[in-house]
Image (cartoon, rainbow, N blue to C red; front, side, top):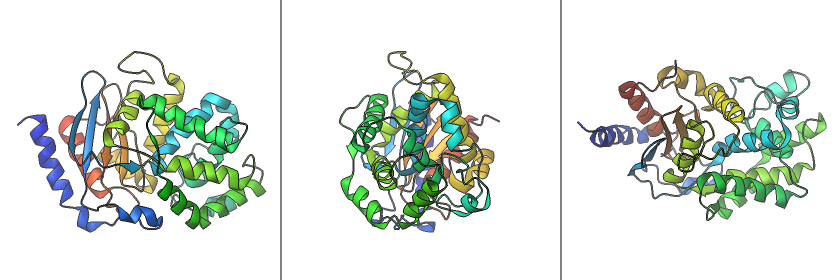
Length: 307
């Protein structure tokens, strides 16, 4: 059986699981997504992308954007500054939790993949104004995706902004303990916008393959991201990228990945390929049910695991 036929079989097996989850609705605009959708693009480091399923569906990055804001902050400010504001350890808590900020002095977020950490990292990105900071983030992602038409979903942005009481609480707490730079509402506005950047599976797989290729553009061999920052990002993806299911994912799949509550997953097999998935039906941890199942089947069959 060819790889295409295997993927199609796994896709139908995975799609059959979507009834066990539900589409995210705590950001009201996300609730409009089809729970039955499932699409995947596989982009080899050498070769053309393979796209199957509902890959024409456009979705917002949500937490996947945290990978790229971390990289941009590292490129702007360096490791010493970034990690004086945010830690390097998984929490084991929900990605929106405030618990560890209060329990563990000095209130520094444990890692950049939880909301508190990502809001803090956003404040470290260069820019004289919130608008300049936001446009630098968007331009960075457009550059990596080789697509200047990538934008953001204003409805999702406005919906998240209107309902983000927990994130506002995190932001003001971080400001109070001296971790967050700048004005809280300005930093949150930039954060909401980069979470609402939208694209397709094919564009997401293009981002993933650059990380799989240690920051090199596979088409031009140009170094788009310093390799040391790619290594840091991939490490966080393994330890914290799939919310508080990251340990289980490392055992069952064994590759760097980052999910978003839109049902998107960016995954990569180092040196081999980047993967972009959309499957909006989520499990209780906030990860795509069908996407997780499909990656597990692929990893078992094709020996993806790094471990």
